[in-house]
Image (cartoon, rainbow, N blue to C red; front, side, top):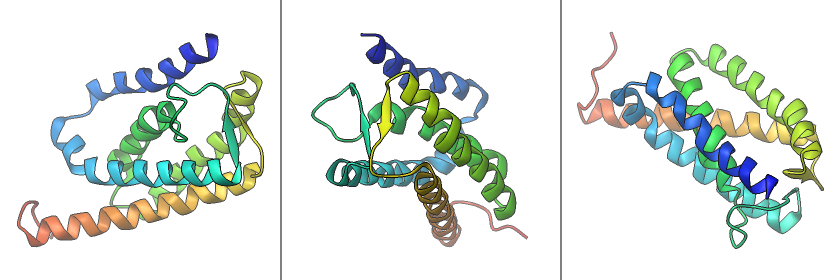
Length: 159
């Protein structure tokens, strides 16, 4: 029961920070947030197949994706990173790398101690590298989205 409560909290609590995000910022980054969540869900499917990690008691046992993580802290942290750093790739990579490091090392260790999930056939370094690679793909996707929107005249071209 304690594990389920933690997963619900993990899903819902990050959304409280949206009170500090304006509607247009949310709309601007929603495509990349959706894309990156889909990528993480795909990685969760692969994890299920190759047993990279194992979630102890997922909220939705029939899904191999960890909905609590994907649509909780991952989704919201991704939004904040884009809001604060988009347009400066070095800053984006630095901030995202810091989040990825914190996730792969201290937070994964904490999650294992709390029996939320555990790493099985993937090292923490591999998790970190996979997270950084995913963040680069996300940034490239956002560049693509911005180009499409500029071409359609939906956002102003930067001088």
